[in-house]
Amino acid sequence: MTGRRPFRSTLLPTCTRPVRATAVSAAALVACVSLTAGCGVVPGVTGGSGDDPIKVMTWAPENTNATNKPGMPAFAKAYARWVNAHGGLNGHKITVLTCNDRNDSVAAARCAQRAVSEGVVAVIGSYSQYADSFLPPLEGAGIPYIGGYGVTSEEFTSPLSYPVNGGQPTLLAGLGKALSDCGPVALIRPDTVAGDELSSLLDSGLTAGGHAATKDLRAPEDATEYAENSDRALRQTTTDPARKGCVVPALGDRTGTFMDSFRRDRGKYPSVRTAMVLGNVDQTEINASGGQAGPYEGSYITGWYPVETDPRWDPMKKVISEQAFGDDRIDAADTGVQTTWIAYTAFKEVVESLTGEVTSDTVRKALDDGIKVNTGGLTPSLQWKFQGPLAAVGFPRLANTDVSLQVVRQGRLVLAKKGFTDVTDTLRNADLN
Image (cartoon, rainbow, N blue to C red; front, side, top):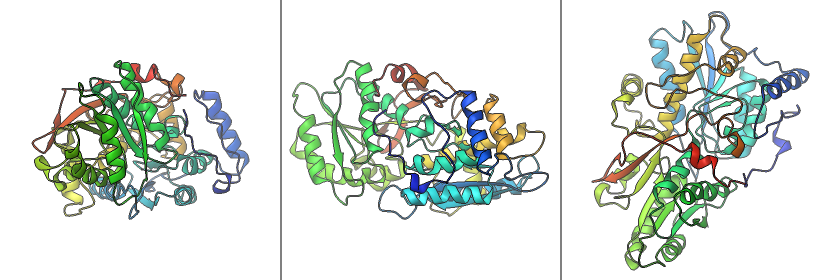
């Protein structure tokens, strides 16, 4: 794929970074282990032996000028309180450490280095744009990264990453497929290295439906208004009077800021449709922007999971009710919170499968040996392989290729199409080089 972040050697441990390739073999992982052992960091010695508490970490950006996910570490803490109040995991108490990634590569590396120094068993349910900063320390110490948000391509290539959703690749491929009947399509995305990957992913779905490639429009990641970008998007998508164009903002937390500018400008142009991926907008944002009278009404939105009102979320809501009632950082409709719940659900199943010590080594071995994780229907059964079905296009660790298509009707997110859509074939045929 294009747009990979450059290697930042100054942020990494002195050990040699294990090799990560498009298709990673079991032999490569063995090589990684031998490399790290030679540096004095032996995988498998962290956390949870005997009756000791199991120590894990969850990180996410908080209080920044760009994307913030405070609900993820807050929910992780609530989950730990709930587990400990109900007998622990396989008889072990759980201790959750949290870290603010700050949307910064140096801070992300420090979070990972702290995870290593604290001897955590796993990093679970976290968000960071800086995989090239946080993965090398985790790989060097043999610490698995379970259920990251999926915002970077490296999360789908590292042999120590175990994603629970399909990240941006599946959401954008699914959205592109849903928009194949649009007129011109414009993508408004951050002018960042991570943002550089988004247009090719959206194009994979558009071209699968016989549509031309998107008009790729860059925008500042942390702007306070987007009038110029909104006007440009509207001009680009209203050039064909016979077909209604589609505008796709993908600006993280700044998507709402873009939509404020878009609402003011759209009346000057012919009607267009809007579409986005869940995580850039959720039910809370739809409510805050005016609900049915707001700019999201009628928008198509792709997500990884069922809508928030689905009863399959009831166990998560019970945790929130018992341990985080009144904590306004934690919202059951927040995709970050939902991802953290699924990641901890996966970790719980792995721990309960173990008969001996709970260490980073035994957890990783159970995952690599092919354990199938059941998430209560929120995802398909999850199983991570070194070379999954999308290894050829650069996503060997992608284990969940299902997306749901939702739409905002009368101010509420509802399913536009029942069930999930599998985008494996769409991504397999994509030109992502």
